[in-house]
Amino acid sequence: MTPRKASCAGCRGVVAKDGAYMKCTQCKQIFDLFCANFSPEKFATFSVEFKRSWICVECCSRLHKGENSQTPVRTHQILDQSMSSPTENVNMLRGGTLFTQGPKQNPTSNYVLNEMKETVILELRKMQANFEEQLIEEIYRLLAEQFLGLKNEFLEKINMMTSKIEQLEVTLMTKADTYKDAITKNLPLNPTTIKVVTKTKTQSQTKAKPVVQIEKPSNSLAASVPDADRTIQKSRTTSTPAASNPNTDNLDKGGWVEVRRRRS
Image (tube, rainbow, N blue to C red):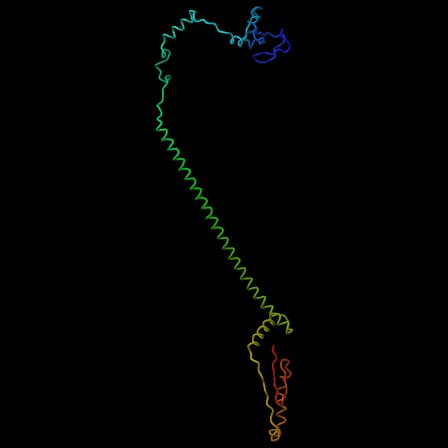
C-alpha cells in the first residue's frame, strides 16, 4: 500500500493508494510502474526480495563501475580495435559519403572582396547624398516660383485697387466742391445744376470784369438842343437794367453812371 499522497519521482504524478509502485532502496523515492518501465504482468512475477532490493535508474548511474578489462569479451574488443584501420568501416565505393574538403580560402581574395564591398558602399552613400541634395534644391526652386507668381499677382491686385481708390478720391473731391458751390448759391442739388454751376465757375474765373461808363451831355449842349433833357432821360433809362440786376451796383457820380459786376 502506498503512503498517503505519494507522488511519482519520474512524472510527478500522484500514485494511487491501491496502485502498484516500486521504491528505490538507495534514494527511497517511489516510482509508478510506467516510470519504472515494468508492466503489471511482469510486476506480478517479482518476489519480495527483488522489490526490496530494487534500485532506480538514477541511483544505478551513480554507482562506481569496477575494472573489467581482464574479461575475455573486453580483451577481444581491445584487440580488434588495435588491429583495425581507421578506414575499415568506411564505404569507399560511394563518393557522396566521403568528406570532401573545400578549397582553401585565400586571405588575399578576402581582403580584396572586403575592399570592393566598402568601395561600393561608399559610392552608394555618395549617390544618395547627391540625390537628396538635388531633390531639396528642386523643391526649393518650385516653391520659390510658386511664391513669386503669387507675389506678383498680389502686387497687381494692390496696384489696381490703389488706382481705383485714387480715382474715387478725385471724384469725391470734385463732387464735394460742387456741392459747396451749390449750397453757397442756394441752387437745387441735381446733376444738371451741378454741371452748370461747375461751368459757370470756370468761366467766371477766366472772364474779365467789364466796366461801363455813360457820359452825360453838358449844359451848353442842353441849352442849344431843345431835346437835351429827353436825351439824358433816355440814356438814364437805358442804364436802368444794370441797376435792377442784383449782381451789379449803380453809382451816380457827377453825371457818370458806373456799373460794377459782383463776383459770383
